[in-house]
Amino acid sequence: MKVEATKKHMKYSIPKLPYSYEALEPYIDAKTMEIHHSKHHQAYVDKLNAVLEKYPKLADDPIESLLKNLPKLDMAEPDKNMLKNNGGGHVNHIAYWETLSPKKEINAKLVEEIVGTFSSLEEFKKIFSDLALTRFGSGWAWLVRNNEGKLEAYSTPNQDSPHLNGHTPIFCIDVWEHAYYLKYQNRRAEYIENWWNVLKFL
Ligand code: MN3
Image (cartoon, helix red, strand yellow):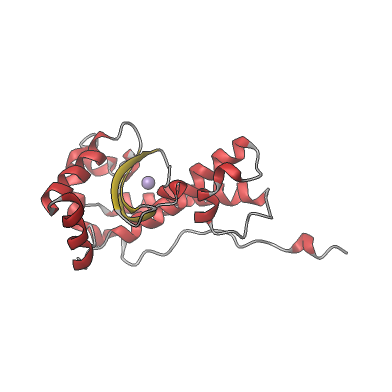
């Protein structure tokens, strides 16, 4: 009898949110939060688990290091792409849920660092909003800590994660239409403007 055949890796699952779906009203509506979390995020998790099922040797590595080392992984190219999109989809959404809060918890040290890097908070907000607004199609805008330990702001397409560059996300905005369409329809700029109200750290 083969014992190892029954050994199962830990499967990923969507996290429980530290606030209710309606907690971010009126800036982000409850229905959007519910569908985004319970349907969209769940779909990334399901596909991530499905692809890792085929690579039991990799399944126990942290997802962040799988993304960082993606080019070197011993996987078929289509599966690498699945891992990039759905592993990215999973970690990006975790970062997004942690970015949001109905209650501000201003991080004074981070504010100081942002001012030092981007000259002022107002200037940073302009740069960041613009990254989110001008990201063509679906994607994200990020504040990250790069490999030199410095703050960097950029946007990524699709579900590309800063972990692909070995960068650590600090906060992010999801600008896929599923993140705002029910309430804001095509008005991405209005969603971004309102999002600052539920950004936890600034
Ligand atoms: Mn999303």
